[in-house]
Length: 131
Image (cartoon, rainbow, N blue to C red):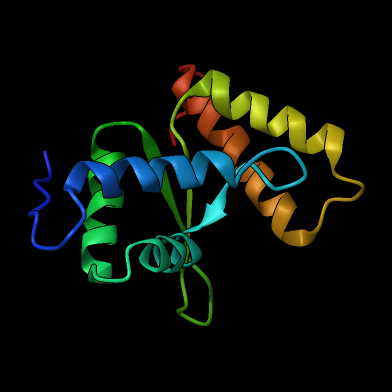
């Protein structure tokens, strides 16, 4: 279990809940079922301007270790890995996949990558695939 040290104005729980809520709110619907990690860190840092980004990253690590979020790292040839975050619940993730299919007018390349990863995670969570 990752321990988040409370060194700033916000409590570790506030940051943790904000991170999970941000991922929940900014995935699904017309948005892909996953979100890139760097914008999550940047956005939550703007909400807690007195906090260091390392506290946000610690909250992400805690959320992934506790099973609220999952992180998928996609290695790229240019050595700039993409880190995706998503809700780590098969039913919720499946709903977000369905919403994206129903509400988006077209799927971008990025959206297709997110769908592939999200579908793989649902399969893994349901026991049908070894991720």
